[in-house]
View 1: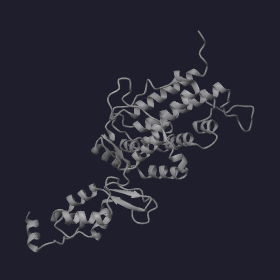
View 2 (view 1 turned 90 degrees about the vertical axis):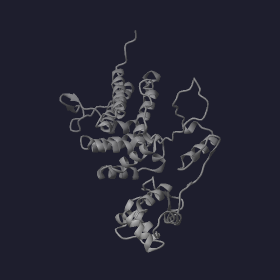
View 3 (view 1 turned 135 degrees about the vertical axis):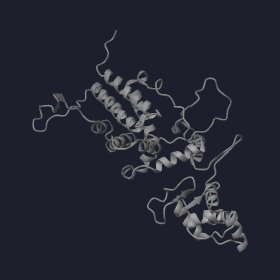
View 4 (view 1 turned 30 degrees about the horizontal axis):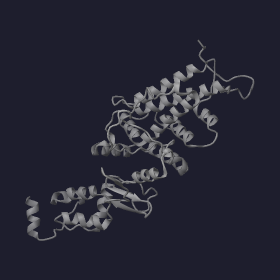
Length: 365
């Protein structure tokens, strides 16, 4: 039997770290799941790149600057390249894979042992696409370098989850995402602002998925969940997928039609809809105070106009304005339909549309 190659134990160690990272990430009982994912994927990439360098004869040890013929040592062992140095060697030019790894290298230094379990959940909600790309990039590098026998496909499967399959799940994830501590929000924003659109829009940097329930007869030979690469699609299929990516695409069983900004309302329409549902006078001033109080969108002139509460408002980059959802109308109607509700929200008495008798009836009611 052939003797195992000397770098294979590094590969096995790398694969074990990646599996542990995924297991921690998917464990709902693990309080520090996201931190565990980041730390163990860091080790998985480090061991993988060390295995590649060992196979290729690349010396990844540090040599002393004052005595170039002597190795730097820590506790008697040669000091080897850290992950940041390995990444630059493996990907000399900036690309989505390198940028994704470097993001997590920086994030690891920010989050390790510093944030409570609630922040861990917020990180998962905000950075799930980056984490998924991080793992997929690892798998692709692993298989590309060491063949199909190294794949994790038989070990890591798509987890059973709820997430955005339900309205309540989606709302909870959006709340978690907005609850990130300020230092982490700043780090993420500053890192992303330094990248080109070409990198941030690449699936190897951040994977964004839209799941669609398959509307075909069951195929006994097909997997329940399958991943199709955008680059493998025909031009017609790409057009359909891009339409699907726009918010508000309506999917029905017989056909699919892309609709730009369906059911989103401009301010006047929101004002009219809310006013029609209330017994009080509701005008533009009330509308402005409402979105400000509920924080559904940034103020005028914000450098980040896209940071809206997506349940109630979406930014239209093409036209530079906002569209409001039916849920926003329903929210305002529910809050303001009673005299007490109006006073609690606005801190002032409402002006009744009809007569003082109606106001008396509302107060008594």
